[in-house]
Length: 117
Image (cartoon, rainbow, N blue to C red):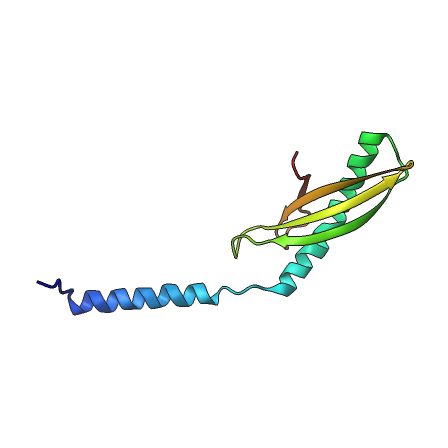
């Protein structure tokens, strides 16, 4: 014998399913937001890489070059993670640092840390 659901329950289930599906499809990836976030975090990541190099090698005259940068996908409305690979040179030496920053575009300064530390 087949189980029959009341019409009201079936309609409610159908409406709820449609709402959930439409809500999920409404979340879209915003490339412009990604670019703003990665551009905003980059100076903080570069500053951290230079400070790490200076303190590890006791060298004050340093330059840096961003080798790569990308956003890490996360929750649609949550914090955005940006990762940078940064080469720092000075005093005849070069080191590469992987810096990860967590921030929200509206905040003044992201939190950045050396990856793996």
